[in-house]
Image 1 (cartoon, rainbow, N blue to C red):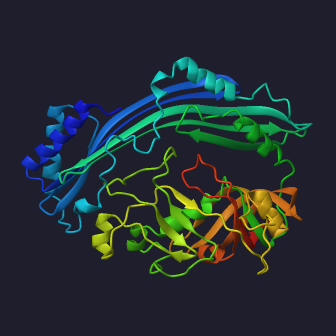
Image 2: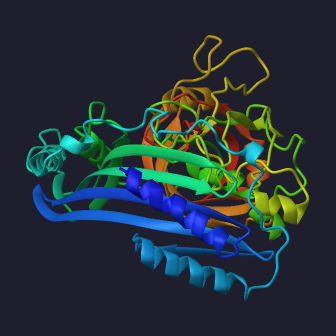
Image 3: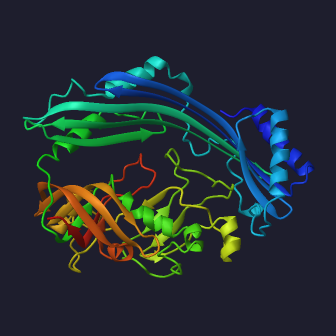
Length: 462
């Protein structure tokens, strides 16, 4: 954790920079520690300890700007670092839009770093033996007794890690904000082999800010079930299908929307949502909110990298674009009001979709479908996508092409595994085909996106 001495050193850097002629400065001090234990086939394969401490200085001088970083955190080296940085900034081209954010926009409530409750007090007491046990206990190699007949587990790579992250941001206008969090993570990738020597691989992961709620015990079992479900997979006939995306992959379809709402993308002419603020662009069922203040959740934060205060807000409401993500610099460049630099904790809200205009829905009541199984029953037939295998999106037009795999379903039930398929289309068109959104969020994911259902998506296969 950041010490009082380190905080005092940051304040000294700010005073020193101003005395050297800087018109403004923002210092970001970051400290992190991470321990990793990797396993291979149920045995310890690699142990890693990483510790990092660094300062990033955003310096404003004579109408110019530069950003610099160092990990030498002693007073004399830092003074030399700042002196050289200011001299370098004065050689750069003036840029009138490079300024510190207005003080009234900045965060004033993140004083200890613990306000959002995402720091685990047990972290300091974790021993090497604890870590080793967590990694080995999560492995199922040699322990699995539920494999389908004819399949064997031939390879399992797992990785346990725990980490501590602490960041302090102070600027010359009086900004002071801090954020501290811990994280416990486990991920596994494994391979099954059938009697013909054909191999099927899959993965699973979990994460939590707290040791008490961190449970990796089912990760390998889930990966095994996912890999076993791939046996016999292949492409099906090309055509338009209803598509359900599992909650583990749905964020792949949301990220391009958030990227297109970035002022950087707009300024560079690489956004298919230019000029869309306040307009209804997507299905009425699409609502994405930013929930940066969710206590105890990973990725929650009270401020962005400039120190600007976050706040709960709509991103897309009922298909209408509510906001762009605009930092101080892009606000000046584009002449639009500043917000924050990016979504912090985006959440796509559940929606009880309709396919025929009636009041019926997947659950038979008034609530939204809960998971992929409800969505498959709602759609009747189609393809459940459980993995994306490469592909790309043209951010200027919104056109996309992604490789996918998953399962064919009929009458709401899975009938066959599917692989080597391609989905193509345009994101504006795709999100206007949204028919329902579930509520099966993976709380360990940075983007809270549930299982989704779309009508009439183009699949290419046989």
